[in-house]
Amino acid sequence: MSELCMVVVPRHRKPQAGPVLLPRLAMMVFVVVACVFFGGRQSLQGQLQADEGTVVAKSSQSQFKTESQEGKVIAPADQKPKLPVRLLLKGKTEYTLDTGTLSPAEYRKKLEEAAQAGRPLATPAVDLTVEITNVSDKAIQIWTSGDPVRLILKLEGSGALNLTPPLLFTREFRLPKADTLEAGRSISFRITELTSGFRGRSHFAYWSEPGEYKLIAEFSTGIKPPPPGSMEAMDGFGNVQLQSEPLKIIVRKKSVP
Image (cartoon, helix red, strand yellow):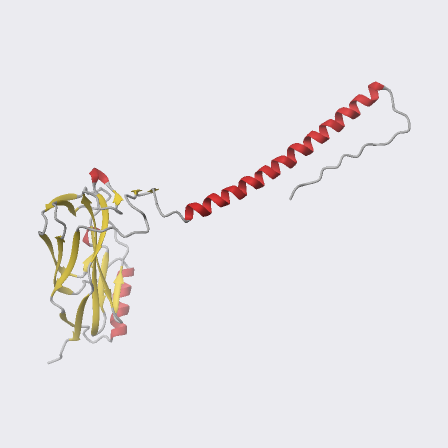
């Protein structure tokens, strides 16, 4: 809204002498200039704010994301990258649960309290394999170890617990190690417990009662050449996240002889 600046000029029947009139005229000119300056400044500021809001709105609807704190996106951000690899979780799917004399609720509470104290209990022993296969027609390089590489095993079900206890790790950065994976070939990692995450020790999964569960493997790594849609990483690699199909697991209560 524009502002109205009014200058009141005193009326006199007779004009006064020049030495007295000049200071009054100078004051009137100053007031007029000040009104024009401040009024125009406010209008300009309002226009800039309106224009800025328009630019932000357009940017939020843009289909292409160019940069972020982690690096550059190599393709449209709203499209999932077409990855040259596939992640498969397989292995033994039936297990037993021994909670001793504890009920499921008591056992769950015991697991949660131990994790909160920074002393997580051992996760269930399993016999599983994570398999990564190059499904493209060209050889690639893939990170298989190091701090940027992370395998997380997520458990789903009515009695599932996925805990991240407050643990301490050494502060050095462990560089990723890359292996060459030829077209059609696979690499495998054996899983013997449901402990995973950063350096294999930050995510703890448990089943607290008998029943049916689903286990999903997520693998964060780097691939070279970088797939379209991946986040630019070091040494020409692209950061990607692989996810397996859920593996159905049956947990039964340990029978008492």
